[in-house]
Length: 132
Image (spheres, helix red, strand yellow):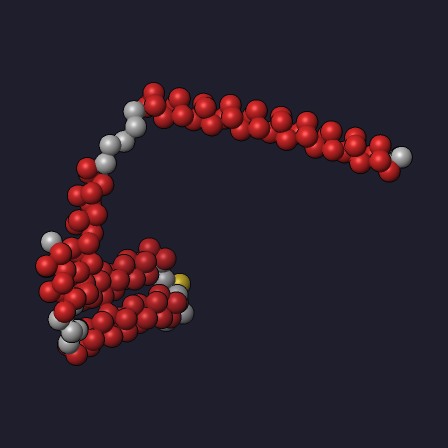
């Protein structure tokens, strides 16, 4: 695993990768500009649904182009590894979650009552000292 990562980090990003990333960014910017530019077309309002569909299509194409670079391949590998790690996690049962939540609520209640009493005691002490 680490040798694969070392090999990927050792290869410098080529100018073709840079060009692909620039194209992807320009596509994204063009999609955003197009979303607002086509708010009306020939004096008629254009449905937001079609503008969002167009924007999503441009984002998909830009993402596809960006994933063809070395950094995109690294990102995909990271996402796959992350997904595998999440699957290995042991999640608490419903009963454990309810018990933990109840304990937190009880402790917060007890602590808030304690701090309220300390505040009242300090307020009484200050009033006594000032003689008011």
